[in-house]
Image 1 (cartoon, rainbow, N blue to C red):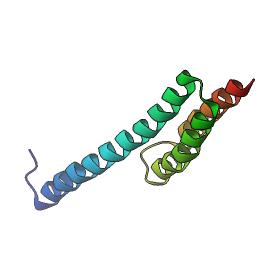
Image 2: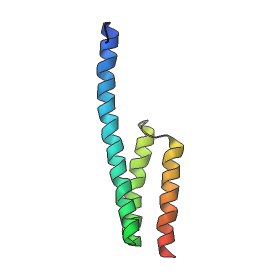
Image 3: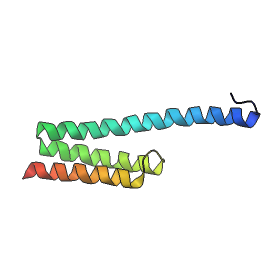
Image 4: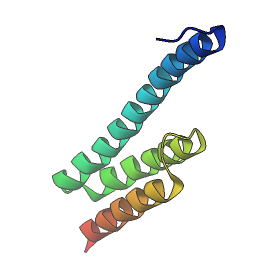
Length: 88
């Protein structure tokens, strides 16, 4: 248990950051799920639109420190190639 005032404040800040990061991660997952659903439905136009909407969310997660830059790039690249493959 935190005893010093500094440790107590840190604990409060950590709780707040945890809640914010959790919400942001959940939002990113929702956008990614929409892309996945559009891909499985086979609708190339809907998948491309969903991917365009998901890209800024992923990058925002990177700038806010929720995701690593390479992780977000990898996810975007893989989704983009799957959306592109729907056309073929």
